[in-house]
Length: 166
Image 1: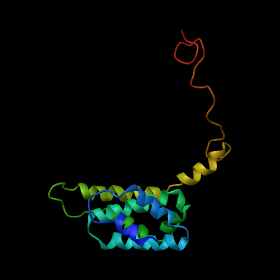
Image 2 (image 1 turned 120 degrees about the vertical axis):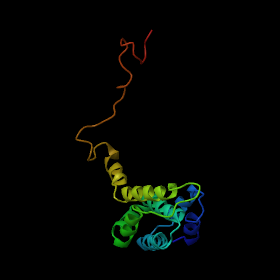
Image 3 (image 1 turned 60 degrees about the horizontal axis):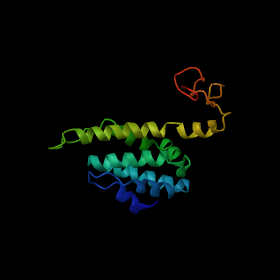
């Protein structure tokens, strides 16, 4: 677990998290134990802080590293198998913090949207499905091959597009 990267990624400012931190954190998740430690840190930070920026950033980090290919699905598994993590994320879906003097309820809405996105990423099978159907013979394609050469070019005499139109 790269704690310094996690601290920088979930700082209490309203500035967005730099994208390279997501990659750095994801690449540090080489073992299931590292995933569990990272998950515990993020869920504790998510549950204990009332700052909406920290909550939003913790949820964003969870969703980004869960979807990252470097974690090889270990982070998704860790989140799904930890009931306290799921409870903390679901609790953020109904987050109602104090109103900001300038932005109003915007920060609270961002926390709720980040929680929804995080749950969608954790429970999605997008990474596994694309890996299975990548060879053209995979499941989920409805038994039909897709794609196909010059299908979008039209015929030579159609006048709609393609080659040979005058």
